[in-house]
Length: 91
Image (cartoon, rainbow, N blue to C red; front, side, top):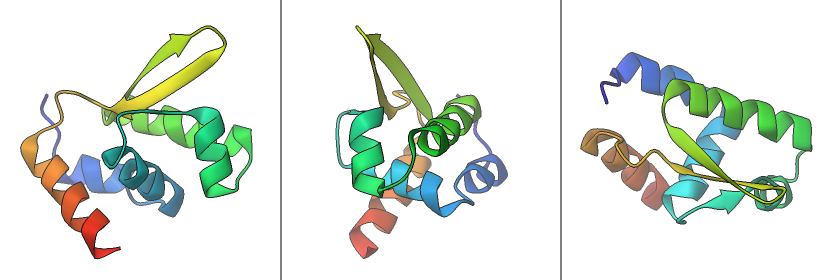
C-alpha cells in the first residue's frame, strides 16, 4: 500500500474522521452503531466519514448479517500506525 503523507493527513483533516481512526487504533474493529454511540452523531454522518476513510485506503469493512464492522486497513504503512499511536497516547 502506497499512502502519501498528504493523502493520509487530508483524510484525517476532519475531526470526526480523526476520532474514528483513533478509536479504531485502540480496537480490533467497531460497528457503525458503536461509532454512532461513541461519537454521539447521526448514522448518515458517521457512514459518510467511514466511506471517505475506506476510499482513502485507511479502513476496510466486513459485513456480518445486517451489521458492518470497520477496522484499520491491515496493510497500513508502519508510519501511519505510529502517527495514530502517538496521537492516541497524547489525547
